Image (cartoon, rainbow, N blue to C red; front, side, top):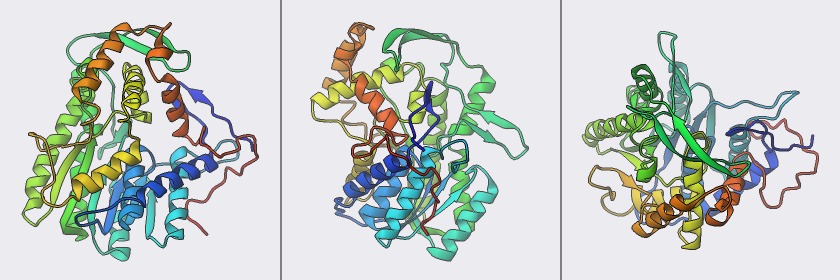
Length: 395
């Protein structure tokens, strides 16, 4: 079939296998250039490995450090009526590239919150790798089925009072004001259940009890802080409450793992176009402005550049891992430079529907969004017939 993007709100309901494959190979090519001054991970588990930062982390570990990897994700293969999900095509392409380079890779397609998937991961690691010395928790899920069968759903809301600020319709470029009503206590608690550190800790528990966590293992989860103008809907909103829980979990895990030579961290990454960030009002406009400022200054990075820097300059640098006063790894250092943020703030005050194309990189935002799903990738003929049925594992 000829596959075209079909965008509904902040989701694209189609994905292109050839575009996904080329993007994975581009990231793998960058990862092959990484140079480690310190130790390298030998075997990694990446929970949430099919898109965004999780995918790029897996690529950096595999093709940069030569690590065998086990990936966990929840994706769907193609059917007679629809393409596979983008994460399915990404993971299939990763497996093909890893096989070509002789690098071990195994994937588990299932609910990462579930005990069955955790047991399957432990068994796979024990059988094929022995132990893992890197565990990355990069899960971005909208809901979680709890042990009693109830479902917790995350929400993107402020806390305490209605939040009003500028937002943008990415497709039309229309800048308007959005009003977001505050979350109630149940919504806050549910968001923490889904996006906090509880499941991350449960994964570490499962790996330790299964005897497959190396004593020197390093584990990390991802977070974001962002500028003050997004605080109300992000860092001080429901997501921020979940991230606070995530950071508290990191401190607890770090104290526990240090006893045997391991470490636990939260890495605060740069704002980028992801499925998660696209869903947050205000954030797409901020990122569009940020991209223009950082690209003009020669400071822009994508996910693989960020994760490459995480591996070589932070997590596996010689000596102690550099962290801020709260023990967090900061990969948002370029984004949060004073000169970058002051210029973004100036443009934020001035931006309207009429001047948004000139003040921002809205075109770059749209491009990056479509590229998440395998579209607008250089070198791909999007008029050609392609087979949407792609096996997850190479023959």
